[in-house]
Length: 233
Image (cartoon, rainbow, N blue to C red; front, side, top):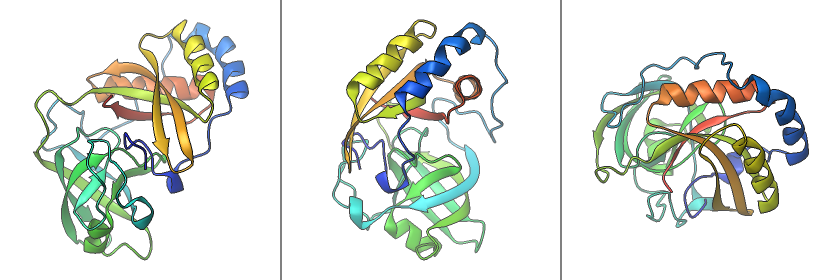
């Protein structure tokens, strides 16, 4: 787990190679004004997302991360009902319902992740036990935001993650190239199990629809996986 809670390393995809990515950027930048449109969502994400609904795959993380710092500064306790989500404001209270067996648990979002496309929430061990999913590791779920216990105005911004590097110079090179065309390009450093990683984020959005649109655009142009994440730094 990172000191800013931006990774679950056992589920983290491979790092983006800087050479192949930068080689794609030059011919792609001239068409940056074109967009294939945002990916469909159940609801747009307002500043205070009570009632937000999402369906997808849940995973869980446990002993290897117990005691590590989460994105909101707490220590991860696998025996408490908490979760990681990429975009919901920290402090969101979420009811998670298994679409397999109907079981429900209520968790508080205090961390960021999972950083694997297709998974929408990473549950603590206690929450995973409540849903009966510890053996299989994942489950199809529906999540509904039912409350908020975060600080006022502490929602941060949404951005698009386009790369993650072990070498800071590679991240800075990608940032410099992207910054020629896009505003609000930044490098966020996080500490994960393997060591420090440098992630490149593009854009600052309040609207998830806008962030989704840029994520789809960059993914198509650069032929990479992109993820919309909430930047709490």
